[in-house]
Image (cartoon, rainbow, N blue to C red; front, side, top):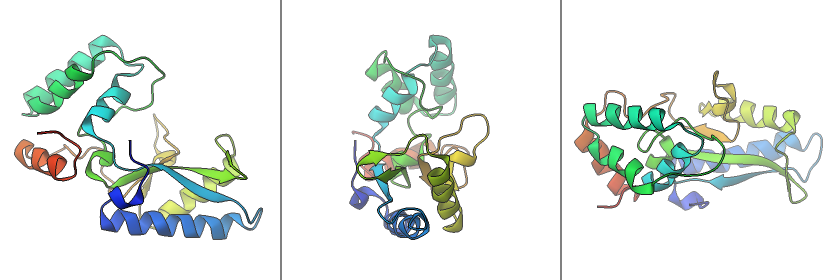
Length: 181
């Protein structure tokens, strides 16, 4: 699990830094010590598979694996098998390769005040969402069906695999150190 902004693609790293700056500026209207804590940047396919399997029914997992295989992404279906069953709450609908975290083009953040994460503070979440939108990024808090307030990504596309070549995807994932070879 990476928290380092240096693990993000340069363009995304610049946007993440700017998001922190703008959030501090906007949130200072209420409290000058409010910040934006970026707690997840690059995510490996293995970590993505573990999160995907949490809270997912076996039938859903098997259907996803078959869908990946049908489209030539056998190597991603194998990662789901390799991690085995996982316990925990449902946190993502994205299987390995389907998250922009795997490509170093997304980050998760939380408003933070006096060493306390503001998970339930709608005011600060709205500031975060407005900042992400202002930067031209896609904010998971605006998603319908499955809201993901911490998530911000450069691409408006929900799934990096749509219309992609499996060989090129493998190459990108290995290049980003998201997939072991």
